[in-house]
Image 1 (cartoon, rainbow, N blue to C red):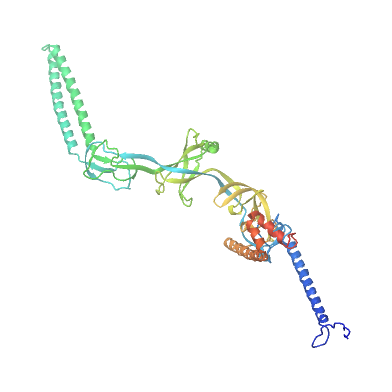
Image 2 (tube, rainbow, N blue to C red):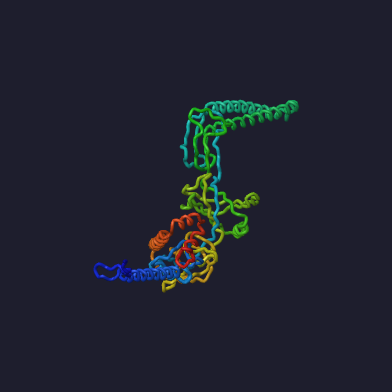
Length: 483
């Protein structure tokens, strides 16, 4: 007979004797509550990130907001941003707005040319007996440069002088005879034909003496040519002949070359658009100042004035040539030297000027940042004029005495707060602030990349550069991406 089946009893705990299932129920409930709390915290963090992200339409490209980065209604660096990274005013340096005379300048490239150039050649052939100069010397016109053996030319002079003396004696004798014949003719003691013949002989001998005198003069001149002198004043070049050489008048290189460098010329060209203004200035009378600068535009070599304007425009280049004359007393300019020419075409009296570094250029034109007494900057649009050195003439709503930003303007917006410091310090401080903000942004980017799955990273690498930022935003909590 089988016993009746008893109901299956639940397992009990060895310590309490209560069913184990009852003990596990509270443990499962705690895990559920903890999971719900984590989800709520994650959702809250994602919502905070979504609301604090920069507006892609106005944010600085590639910027991720960091703990100390300024952010206004328009995003990072937008119109509402008042302070820079770390909540501090933007460090800048400033320069004054003032009135002063400013020159209207025109830049050109010129070539230095000598006022005169002469190749010193001997005018007679002979052996070079002495050299009386040193290469590179400055010489005056008429200075002795070299000597040629004069003996053959002295002999030619002596021969011509002897012939002259002989013919002069014959002429004197013929004149005495003519006087005697004329006396006899007055006494009717001689025929007139004989007197006429003697007169013709006197005239003949007079012509011979004149020719002899010309030969003597030519011989003296050739003898003087054995002393080679400088035809012009200037600087000597390299010697082209040595002692003992037989030099000839037909030699192409001559003995030495002289270039006149005081004064000296500079030839340069300007666009034909400036021709009318230059021509009007030349006709008006006052000289047009011209400056010659070295190749790097660092050192001014000389100051001169325009002396000549060409009579035709070069149709190939659309330019016209001008010549400027420089005294060149210090010898800073050399023939065939390259130089930068600065031509002053006008002078603006009492013009409104700002430092050139203060001028900013954007899609809306040119402008400057004006700093008020409260340390706030305001944008003022300006129209640029002539530029001279570090100063630029402008037209706009500026007053002399106002301060404009010269360093650190690249991180400013209208209405931003600034701290005025020295120029070099402004750049260093601005760079330090940018570096601090950059570290925060870099840390945020690294954290975001670490949260990506391998598949998301692979897709990010395959996207073009301009689409990667949009893809990263879509992966953010609340961005609509499937997780």
